[in-house]
Amino acid sequence: MQMGFKVHQVARVLDVTPPAVTQYLKGVRGTKMPELENMRQMIDALADKAANRIKGGMAPLSTVELLDVIHQILAVSSGERVLRSSSENGKRNESLAALKDRLQLELAAAQQCFSLANNAKGDYTRLLMRMIATDSIRHADIISQIISFMETGIEIRDEGLDQSLLKDVLAIEDSADETSLLSAVKINHSVAKLLLESIDMDEKKHDKLLGKMMRSLSEVEKHR
Image (tube, rainbow, N blue to C red):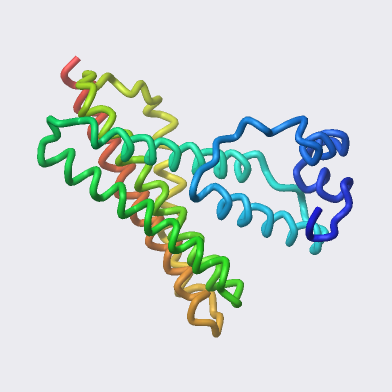
């Protein structure tokens, strides 16, 4: 509401009822969220996105977009818990030490990029910095999960993925990878070009990872 929007406008973009927004404002809801170092930047980024949706009269934020922010907050929370507990673990091997050092760097990078995004004047630059921050948070999430596995020693189980669905996803990614956005889209903005290039790079990465996962699952099936 600090941006001057009315309750019904905020409710529409969040796809909730106006009374729900009022309860959040009064502290009736949402009072049990943990205080995290990077949480404010994530919420500010979501607020900016919601504000742009309201100003442009666009569709409400999707469930996927809201869940993505929740996922980021949980990832940072997990990473910070791992860093706090690392001093209590006197038997870290070299791999765990390397992972925990990298985890600290990823969280620090995310914080710095969020700060740069908040201070950036251009929309494209702001978006690029937030994208890099989000990538760092996802890296931290992956590292936290691997650290947890290495410290607990729980045996890896079959992921139980449906190979037919995985093939469908791989086909979609193959189709997307065939067309380079950087080549197809003509725009005279250097940072916008970097953003398009990042999408092309992600498609190539997805195609490679999904292909390796498919081959790995096929090998598992052969040995059953």
